[in-house]
Image 1: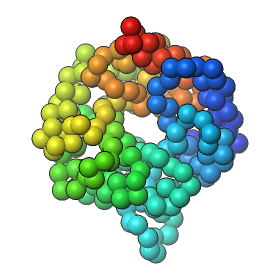
Image 2: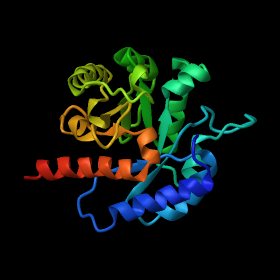
Image 3: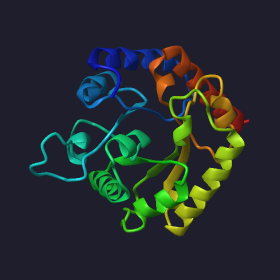
Image 4: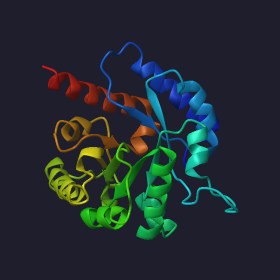
Length: 234
């Protein structure tokens, strides 16, 4: 949730200004609240910023008051959706079965899911995906987010994240999803520590929470990603 429509649009415009004139850019996905999606889409439509949602209902259609389906998200231009975030697991008691249904809904609608997993990351990946038939051309992002690091200002150590990402990668290989997947880190990522994560080959991106609400912090994170890309091209 977090920002309202006006604030979300202002933030999107700030990100647009931030990337103006940059030739080398990472993939940038912003995930505003449901009520802001359509307005933010107007701002980002002709840019290199991609649009994501914070939640998706598991059903394709029907009488499910209050839910938003993957197809409805797709219809307004949403390309990514966060699934299984620790806050939703904890507060709304979303379990592996529901998360698997949400993943299926996203894949069916042609949306790339960002599957969030915590300390028991490899097991959560297996439970969410083992019974799914993932389309061959579909993409999956797995975000490792240790719950103790979310919103606390205490990020995990890059070496520990690398170890966890290797376990997740092994699980994805067992599921034959390795080549379709990207693994990112989330948990108190900010402008100061982003480079230390992104320079590790096993950490293929970051899922940014509170720091994304401050444009100067987000600028630093994008700058760190650009520096890593530039170094890789040398």
